[in-house]
Amino acid sequence: MPSPPLPPSRLLLLPFEGYDHIVLWKVLVGEGDTPFLVDHDAAWCQSYWFYNKHLTYRFPLNLAGPTARRLCVLETHDEGPGFRCLVGPDFRSLSPLGIAERDGSYSFLDIPGACHAAGHLTVRLEGCVVSGFALTT
Image (cartoon, rainbow, N blue to C red; front, side):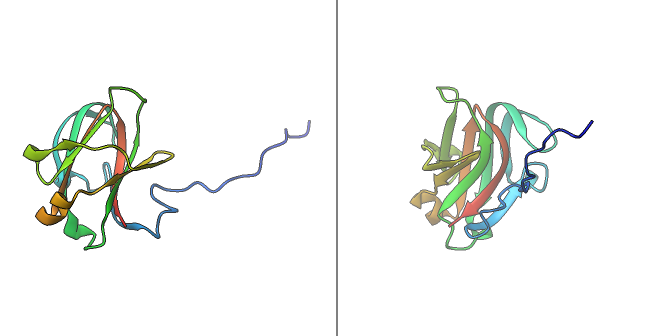
């Protein structure tokens, strides 16, 4: 019997590939993210966080230089009240922030001016599966 017809193959992209023109710095869960992890109540699965009640990271903005304007989070979430994103310069001054842009599993968040002034971005995510972060233009 002949083989069944197969669709043409497609290139499989790694996380943040295809965004090279805007990514200034990136880190994947399980590949160097530990120094930036502040607090969590989530289950870790080698390369992503799931069952996420809360997950907090703090990134020095000098990792990307002065042109970093957005944080891109590689994540998935259900639409509804369970998903929340809070940002601020430190753990004690977090405020809710909506997603500025969504492209597939990439959520782009605008970095507030207070974070630029302090030199750090703290982000707390709730109710989503998280695989990585990138500072972008």
